Length: 115
Image (cartoon, rainbow, N blue to C red; front, side):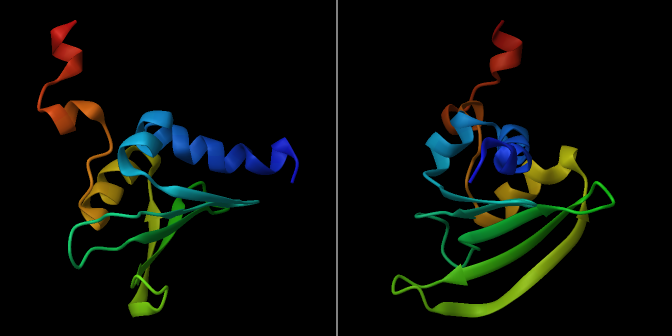
C-alpha cells in the first residue's frame, strides 16, 4: 500500500485527534482507499467497538458501526450513519463508543483555558 492510499485515513485520524486519539482509545487501525476502520479494545458496555469511517463523494463522512464479542462474532446488527460533517465526527465517535478522545476530557481540565 502506498502512502497516497493512506491520505484519507490520516485526515480522518487527525480530525479525531491524531496520535492522542489513538493513544487514549487504544484503537487498532486499518486503512482503506476511501477511509479508515477502528477496532476499540475497551468500550463502555453495550457500545459500538468497531467503526468504519469513509469519505463520500459529497465530502461528508459515512460510518458503519458494529459491535463484536471477544471471539469476534458480530453481536448485534450493524448500523450505518450517513452525512456526518468533519466538525461533528469526534463528538459522534465519543457518543458511539463511550470513550474520551482527548486528554483534557480524561483528566478533567480544559487545556485551552490554561494557556
